[in-house]
Length: 150
Image (tube, rainbow, N blue to C red; front, side, top):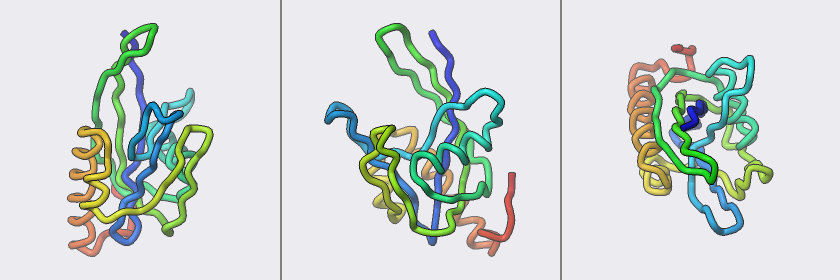
């Protein structure tokens, strides 16, 4: 069994959430949140920001740590147990450009209910629920965009 760690972001601009559409030779298809593997020498926040930038082209800042999710999957050699650390992020625009090298073919910002139903994985839906609730709390208290909370 292999332990792996990734970090990602729930990126919000004007109340809409950034999603990426992945399509690997029509075998794997689905909408996901941006995330990726921690590289040597990086802390989790650096990884989350780098992965959001690389996979989507979005410029974002971290507002708050959301939590983590875990899942397992099998590759021919072994089983991988992955933990993903998630951050609530604020973008500076609706700009996004999917990273073709990672098989992302589309990206965009969606209303909460649209994003929730588009997401492929239940654990990402759960993270979206937590992140959006925290976003609404910050916004309700006039704190969204004023400073970082991590």
